[in-house]
Image (cartoon, rainbow, N blue to C red; front, side, top):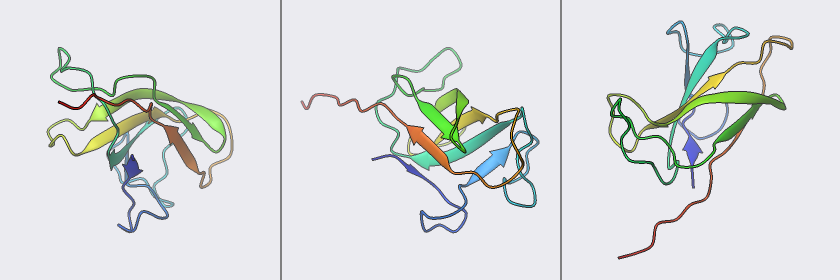
Length: 116
């Protein structure tokens, strides 16, 4: 089961994310419209083999919405420079809407590898 890390470490509340300008995503430093946001978690499922950049992306189509609006998933896979247990989504923030806290929903394709 995939899970997104949170600032509180409890699995509830603000997702642990980094804005495209390198700041921690928060109510005082929100992602700006049109920018991207990296959100961190684990358990994203089955991965493709390493690409030319050495990163392993999630196999299948990962989707996400922010505040009920489809977000473009730029990348979903292992976090660069980290172990296989740390994954990230890079999401494009919608260019419209008001600046406020929005719920993030994501879907990682359910794929299973056979045993043995």
